[in-house]
Image (cartoon, rainbow, N blue to C red):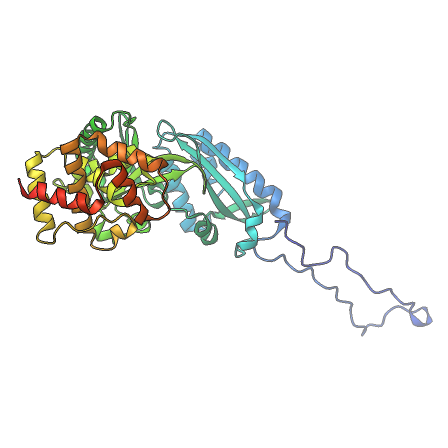
Length: 415
């Protein structure tokens, strides 16, 4: 938005009257005081616009060229905290396979919703792509705050709570801390200073998990990005459960807010990174979500999570899996397969155990293809409520979900 000026472009001065008797003003005459030009409201000094846009271009050139000195020269040195995070961010991106980098002027209509800061604020769209992992470039909408520096401009901030809330932006590891990037084949793992000590073993477990999931889903590319950092900000934002109850989350990365998905990635709780006993199972589970990507978006939650947990446990002998299911379900009975997101908030431990058992039962007694076929069925099935999803299961399998649960529990108890 082009800010309206708060002052008149032309000052109207009163006409000078002829002096009496042709004399000049006396020594005691009151001097004329001209009205001062008011400063533009915070963030709206349009006289700085050209310099700010030149700075945007300079930052893009520096980032593309990998010129750290030129990149940091665009930052206000008096903004000490921002200067430090910008240096860290540049160093972080240098470790990543970044391509398609650009900065573009964004939607200026959004600026009516932004609280004024600095001398000038402008919307800027930052685009980048993780080469070999993202199907298309990913664009983040930002608001930059500039301050005057002589005839030029400097950047003093690139964060804005209004646009981050509007776009649902979630910070990536390279936005939060110093990162340590490991890459092996199609695996790109991002650690931080606290989790990097486990990096070698985690990469080995990720490779093993990839092989297991790839065997169950052979069409999967086996290429993915995983985050394993100590900051749980993103984990807390994405999970429907508490952080303590969340081992990991797989998530889509849209090319732009509301746009097509550029990639599926997953992140794990930092406690999992160092947990030798459980991380392999967590990796296998989350990688099923990554491999299926958007293909299970319309499936009931019990099927989505049950199929992933079935694959995660598939490395165990089937009789061991049945006994584990009985222990987890206890004397509670078969229970109900929860199709909605209440799966995560109403006794999630029981829901995961039952969903895993049902999917294991189907895969073992009818063949694993039945799971993937059922997921595909939901992609085109006609239903408007989760209650109606039970009808899809009955038509496809010949059983209601309650009947399916009862049969699965009987199967497990016969082990």
